Image (cartoon, rainbow, N blue to C red; front, side, top):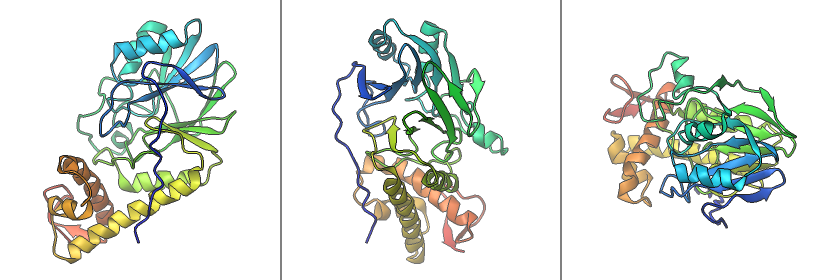
Length: 300
């Protein structure tokens, strides 16, 4: 029987409102709902007086205006970015223009892959260049708060989570979300890295997750285990397809994602490709040439 992930999709909020969601944590949700962003990008404000902002969101001047209106009289000292998809980092430039705060992130788009000599196609926020590069385990402090950097590549190669140490609350970006699984799209997305990053979270002491999209996750470890099992089941579904003679990803998608509307098939194909690349790396699948969407696959 397939793993049933206990998704949480109920979220009480008002667009444009900076709301207190936990001690030391406020959030404002950008009005950019979509099949990929759920209700929209949740921008977090950490602390009081001297604050950090996490994931300023899309290049939406109205969102930044409402954010600053909601913290009037306070100072933004740090701007943190979990990763460089267009619904997360472009707003940092607008916020920086208004506040002068520095930006902090693992690196520009594709940073984790470029370090390995793997070129990354455009598609992310290619203009983003953090003022300060962050490393795994690094701790930054502000007015009454401290954030630990937790490097979690997979969804993107530069994905970084941040733990508010005083609350053991992890801001998980798109790595773990309550409303949906994450898209892992090669070449920047990497399924092996994604699963390893999920396993990394199982060794931590975080009490609650605050994803950039959707509600909080109050009991995180069972959730993470469910996500790992789900990915393993998807890989087994790929292997079943190949055993049945289904050799192309475009033909696998309708079988693996039978419940998905067809307009989502291209995104699903990218996730299947990520599983296929991982299976080829493990020697469980083989192909002629490079593992890609149009290739044909056989059992390894």
